Image: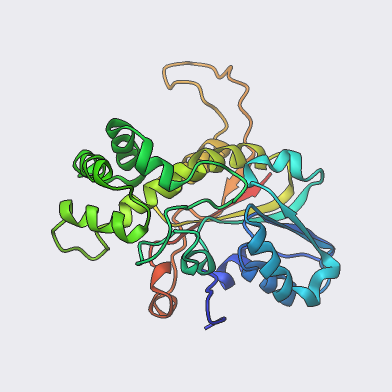
Length: 305
C-alpha cells in the first residue's frame, strides 16, 4: 500500500511508457495526490521539470507536502486540464492524464463523491464552480435528470430513478448521498457485482464537472504542447471516457478522412500521433487484488510524430 488513503493506478506501467529522458519536461495533467509525479521524480533525477496540474486546490496542497523533496523541479498550477492552452506556454516531452477520482476525494464526506452514509451531495472537483449534485437532484426536471443518468451513467432505469427522485423531493429536500442511495435502491432491486447506485453517482459527477467535454477539449489541444516523440499516456475508468480517447487516437493516427469512394485524397489531413497500444493496458491481477477500484482502468498511449 502506498499510503493510508491513496493508490496510484498502473503507476509503473505509466512511467515506463512515458519514455523519460534526460532534461525532459513532463506534464502531470491530473496531479491528484501526486503518485505519478512522485514516481517520475524517483525514476530519473536528471529531468528538467514536471508541470503539475489539478482543478482541486486541496489536492494540490496535499500533493505539495508529499512532493516537497522534489519541489525544485515541480511547477504547480491550479486549473482545469481542458484549459491547457491557457495554463502553460511551453511544449513537453510527455503527458500523463489519469481520469480517476482520488481516494482522498472519495473519503471526504463534504465532497460527496461516494454513496456512503453522511456524504453531502456536492461532487464538485473545483469548489470554485457553482453547479452541485444537490442542485441537479433537487431542481432539474425529471426529463433532464433522466437524460443525465442515461447518457453519462448508462443507467437502464434512468427514467424510473429520475421520477422517484422527483416524487421524494416534493416531500423533503434530498441532501445526502445516503438519502439518494435509498431512492435508487427502490428501483434497482436486483443484485449485481456493482452497487446499485454506481451508475447514477457516476452520471451526476460527470454532469457536475462537465468531464467528457473537458477530456475532448484537452485531447484536441494536446498535440500543440507535445514535442516530437513525446508520449501521451491516458488512463480511463469507464467506457464513456475510453471511447473518447480511443476515437481521438484513431483520428490522430489517420492520414486521410476522405470516403473510400473518393479516388484521390484532398482532405489534407495530417497524422499527428502514432498509437503505441493497439489494445489498452490493463492492471495486473496483483494490483486489482490490492486495489479493487483499479479493475476498470484502461491505459492508452500515443506518440507525437
